[in-house]
Amino acid sequence: MKGLLLLGMLCLFAIPFAAGQESDQIGFPQLNLPIKLHVNESAFLESESLQITLNHIEDSRCPSDVTCIWAGEAKAQLSLIHNEQMGNLTLSTMAYNKPVSFDGYLISLIKMDPYPTSTKNITSADYIATILVSKEEGLLSPKQQMTNGVLPQDVVCHDGLALVQKASTDTAVCVKPETAKILAERTWGTILKEANLETENPKQVPNPASTYCFDNGGKIEMSQTDAGVEGICVFSDGSKCEEWQYYRGECKPESSNTPIQSSLEITTEKDQYAIGEPINFTITNSGSARLFPIGWGYSITGPNGEQYAPSGVLKMMLIALSPGNSTNWEWNQLDGNNTQVGPGQYSINASYSEENTEKEITNSKLVEITSQ
Image (cartoon, rainbow, N blue to C red):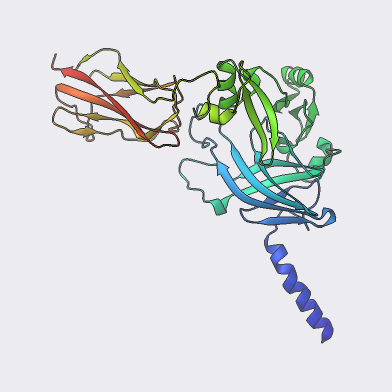
């Protein structure tokens, strides 16, 4: 009887641990093996006395069925406890993202599932972050990582090495950038991830905030913080801004005393159009702060106050309009019933909101549709 009671107690205590395991995650979480976590779920590496909790996920990746001007990224915010040491990290899916160091360990985000689509709403509970934990003194070789269940495209390389997947087999290697280029040219394999290089060449940094910094005469320095690795834009006058704050217009070089202003400009090819002639127009952010579209970002008002709102499926994500950038649209002079509108004056209206303040920024332009 005592044996049955003891067995029952063991099974009872085992259930909470088993419920948190993924089907392809065998046994307890371990070093150098993929660890899958939902939001508010923890993994405890018993051999290391290391606890990792996934607190929050941010996902700005471009949906797989939508065309965007940049791929976006997913971020995982983790809290860690090792012995008496506590810390918080933010990991990213971006290719240039490096493993983050914590108390002698390297923590990497190797995958975030599911990948977004425009037709499916993903809740926080749906996400699964796959992370990899290794000792800081040594990262396992690609072969050892794959033996432990890491997919070829998710292998983590040392800094300065590129990840190349062999064309003929389901394997991957970490090689120097020049070697990766030669292998790709010889069709030996495909470059999955470029080398992590700290460089002043914006073409090698697939990050719009970093590119914006470079384009405006700054350079990027990487800084380790409690929240993870941050990019710092350093200006010629010696002042600094966190790269994304600078990109959003929240931070300026100390030498710049120009206040942040927001404005929109609408331009057309001409002011008069014949009936049935497509009207092409451009909306430009002519201010100094990033703007986000309200709805589609534009509407058309007819001579008698009729509203002609855009319809149909978005051709691309409605993302922020950075200072100096433009978006192009075309109105075919049809109303919501696909009927040609009549002659008269029509107002093209742009409507955006200022980032952070959510202040509405608007402008309009009149065009005339003539009967001839």
